[in-house]
Length: 182
Image (cartoon, rainbow, N blue to C red; front, side, top):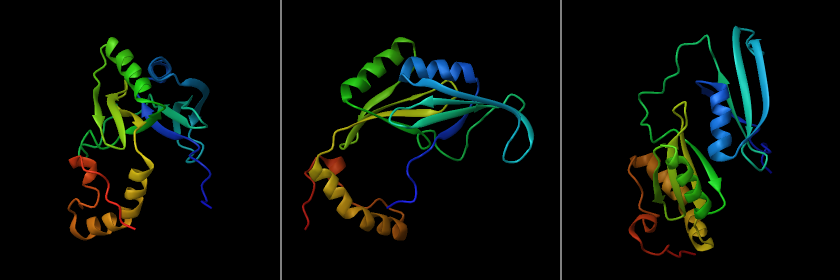
């Protein structure tokens, strides 16, 4: 049994708390569930006013944001490519994902995809604070899941030694069938 029951919440910084709550409600149908505002950070006791907002991401998942008006404008890690750090959110179907894409694009929000990752399809876009988001709809089969589970440690260990992409799951990219190895 895992020590962790679930993720209580994931928190990011935002440029404007109200705009963020409204945007996530409009485009991702997340309800605004809680706001906490303080003039002092509870953990460090630093004098630093903030607005902390919490959004319902479904199934007990909570996405939170901090607006920090006294801090310099937020940036990003310039040493990490923009495609790397992102929040991937699962949707129930490719149809749901495509409806969200249409809603975003109708308001002029640029959306990349859908991208076919073999075991899921996804779209990518940015929120008003510049956070990259992904909506993903699973398309895997039990056979694919089993094949990937079987090679995960071999892949990780090979990567750790070589820092080159292992070919154990090449079928995900070349269109072949998953290899059955018992």
